[in-house]
Length: 219
Image 1 (cartoon, rainbow, N blue to C red):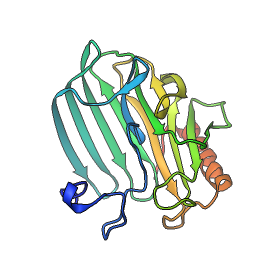
Image 2 (cartoon, rainbow, N blue to C red; image 1 turned 180 degrees about the vertical axis):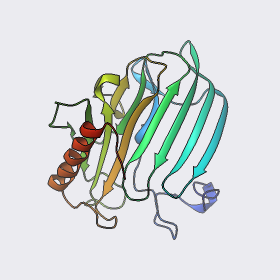
Image 3 (cartoon, one colour; image 1 turned 135 degrees about the vertical axis):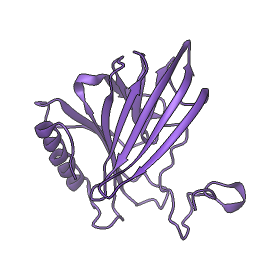
Image 4 (tube, rainbow, N blue to C red; image 1 turned 135 degrees about the horizontal axis):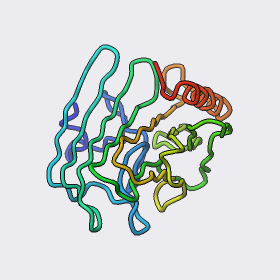
């Protein structure tokens, strides 16, 4: 179905279809866990790239997509950025790894911002990892459908977290070393889905405890 999704004559991919539907309206935002560069009070996406190379790896224990953006131009900077996104068969999270070719200000990720949906952070600040998250009625399915979204980040790699125009943003410190973070969505209608905010926060705190204990998430 992938070559046909989003084509003008086949209707919106936000409508329920035999293959499923996209329940999240991202608009100009990073959606959840997307990446870009915060520049001049806005997030620059990938409108100006010399070449993009994609490689997909499927294994029994994980699947990943590796993307190389060559000559990504933002402002007066041009860099190469390697991105790796990895999913696992038994959990909700995606591991994201970003490796810039040189130190650059403003490399960021985020969660789409919705009116009336507050952002919150982890309660345990004793470790290196923390998170930002949202929970509430923020899907396109209906007015009561609930979704939780979260980004887990290593605080030592982060310059600041704040509210942008379209996103709740996590901006990373300039570095040419690999930046690792995790993002996830928890939809109440998924199999064995999380049904309320209290349960979602409990799940996030358990995940945060594992991250601060081992430094990574395991399936």
